[in-house]
Length: 426
Image (cartoon, rainbow, N blue to C red; front, side, top):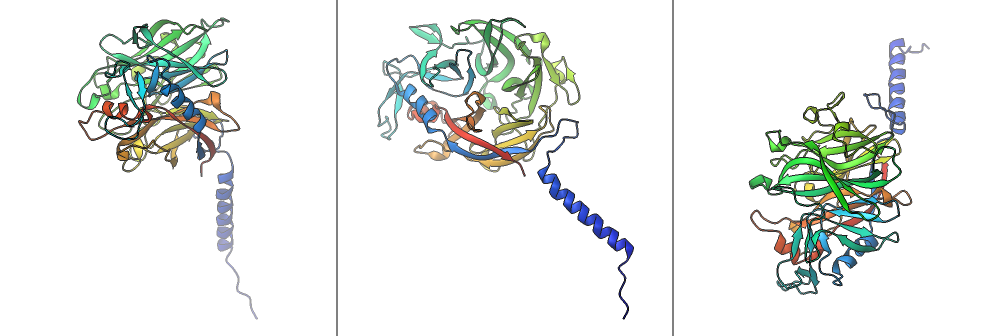
């Protein structure tokens, strides 16, 4: 009885298919290397999270305390920097300074609400800072102006204002032992229509002395006023991370017709944030002196893009960018958080990967409560869990002002915190 022979070509093809399948399985488990030659790194994403109620509660305690009525009761743009003596400086953009009243609010709803000390409209200033002790207790609010008329910590720019973003502790001059705090600022001018949150003008760096946190000066580092189209102007400082001898500073444009922005990248020798001439900008292939030659490291389009504020952290060799899901369907750009990963700050960035929907405070019209501005605080990392803050606001129908709603429910304009654990991105 003869046996049927299997053709040699069939045998080789089967072996090749088996090898390819095995290679594919192995590739999921091995670190990946980006085509630009960056070191191999595993893909990362947000794998799990839990609410950090104690820290959220500490800001509630401090905001509700009426011992003083010229200090912080709410703000957004939440950023932090650990000081050499163990304190933490929390930086805020638009901030309410006022008194918190018990419920019910004037609309008869069961929310704590705010007024000025004399019962009038609350004070709103474009920025402040809040100092936290080494033990984690919020102690004081830093403002400018005078005790009788508190102003922003970083004075309003001529014809506009300043919002603080990322900050770092650096030597006063390269190699010096004396330390100062460098705070990146966004300089914006009033606008109308799609520019209701201001027209971007420039990135600046403020210097605060240590340990007294006195404002010494503000210097401009990246001027964008020569860019004719405001939608193409890039402000830097949305995120910042050190790597070796460099500080990498991420920025974004702000196209009003799109929910998504593109991310850009600059780098500065560590310790030289305030030195305008030391800034270099990634053009897609090289580092350039001219900011107008910068090209996105992560472009908007389709499912991709970043919010106007996002954050970047290191997880071993992997860079992780966390942002609102601006490319998501429906309202996910103001409710859900997603992430990207890369083996280098200039990319390529992979994602978006995963999605989480952080809790928002209760409100009479919850459909208008928005979450935004996710920010990592690596100085609070514990047991492998990253601290992530996000801001909440009330964004109702067009033409309906938000301030009355924010004043009628103080929980709507205070940071909330999560503990986030990163895992492998499939």
